[in-house]
Length: 398
Image (cartoon, rainbow, N blue to C red; front, top):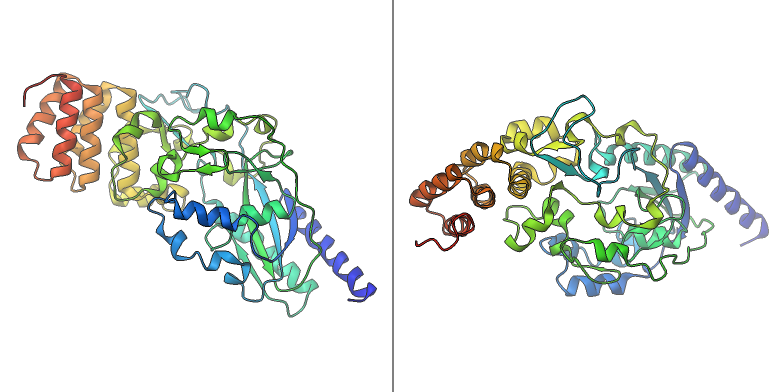
C-alpha cells in the first residue's frame, strides 16, 4: 500500500471515530476482522454446558469463528460503546418502597439498570448505527457494512477489547477506566481495512469483589460464568421452566436481570451517568411492583412491556419471577394474588406460586395449597405444592 493510501486510510479511520462520538457513542475503537482471540475460551465454555438452554449459541458456533460469519467480506470492525448508567442509587443498597411520585409499594422489585428505561436500547443503538453507516458509505463509496447490536454471532466483547474499549473483568464484563462496565456494545462491520486501535491492558489486579458478591455462586473461577446459576439468565433466558428451588431464595428481590457483580466493581464507582432519556428509569420500573405484576395477563404484558427488554421472558417468565420476589419478601399482601395463580393455565406459574405461598406460610396460604393439592393433576406442580406445605408446616404428615 502506498504512503498516500495509508494516509487516506488513517484519515478516514479518524473521521469515523470522530463521527461516532459526535452522534452519541462515548467509546469507539477499531479492530481488524480475524479469528476472535477468546474463541477457544468460548468453545470450552459451550462444551462445559454453561450456556444452559441458550442452544442458539452452539448452533451458530461456526459463525462465531470469524466476523465473516456475519459479513462475508468483513475486513474491519468499528466497535462502539454507549453508557446507560442512570444517576441513581446503587442497586445493592436497600431498595426503596417509595417511587419518585410518592407511590408506595408493598413488595418492590429490582430491574437491571439496562432495562429500567421506557424503551429498548436496541432501537436507539440501531438508529445511531444506521447514521454511522451512512457516514462510512459517504467516506468509502461502494463499501459494504453491517451494524450489529448483540443479536448476531459475533463475540463483541472480544473485538471491543481488541479495539481498545476495555478489558475483560473477572465477571466476564468488559471494563473501561472511564465508564466501568455500564455501557452497551455495538459493532459496525466494514469490508475495507481501517487503522486498528491498541488493546487495553487488564486493570483488575487481585480484586475479586465481583466473584465474592454473587449470591448464586455463578462464577466457577475468574472469567468463567456458569449461566445456569446467573440471576440474569434465570430471570430472562430460562423460559418455559421453573427456576431451580435452590436458586430462588438467593435471587432476593431481582425481578429481571441482576447488577450485583457490576455494582461492587471499583471501576463502576465513578462511572458517569448517561444523558440519554431512553435509559432513564421509567416510573413503573424504578422499582417495579411485584404484587402488581402477579396479575399480568398476556395482553397486558405485551401492552406494557412489548417495546422494552421486559418482553423477552414473556408473561410466564415475568410472573414467575414476580412470584419468587414476593415469596422472598414474605409479605402477606401477596397471598391472594398468589392463590389466584394456583389455577393459572401455565404449570410453571402454578408451581412457582405454590413455592411462594410456602415461603409466606400464613394459614390462608396453607389452606389454599392444601385445596389445590387435592385437585392438581400435574406431577411437577404437585411436587412443588408438597414442598411448599412442608416449608409452611414442617413435619406435617401427608
